[in-house]
Image 1 (tube, rainbow, N blue to C red):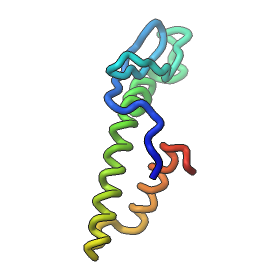
Image 2 (image 1 turned 45 degrees about the vertical axis):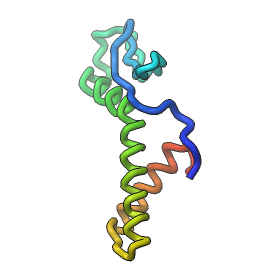
Image 3 (image 1 turned 135 degrees about the horizontal axis):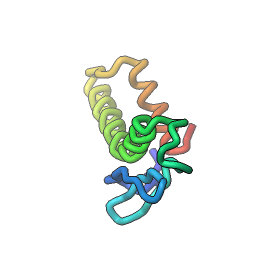
Amino acid sequence: MSAAKHTPKPWTRHEVQHRIVATHARGYRVTVAWMADPHDDAIPAEERDANARLIAAAPALLEALEMVRDADDDCHRDDLPWLPPAARSAIDAAIAAARGES
C-alpha cells in the first residue's frame, strides 16, 4: 500500500463567486464546478451540490474503505472470511483508483 498523496479529511462544500468548491479545514480550495450564470440550469443545482458533497467526502470515504479492507485482511488471517470476493475486488479497485494505481 502506498502512502496517501491527497490532502486528508475534513473537506466541506461551499459556493464561492459562481463556483462550487471543496474546502479543507486548513483553507485549501478545489473548484468542483464553475457556474457561468448561477441561474443556468444546464446541470441542476441539486446535481452540482451532490457532486460537490461527494468530492468533499472522498477522503473520508477512502479512509473508510481502507478500514474495511484492513478488517477483511485481519479476518482472512484468522481464517474467518468476511467479505464476498466481488465486494473485496470492488473495494480494492476503488482504493487503487483513488490512489492513482489503476
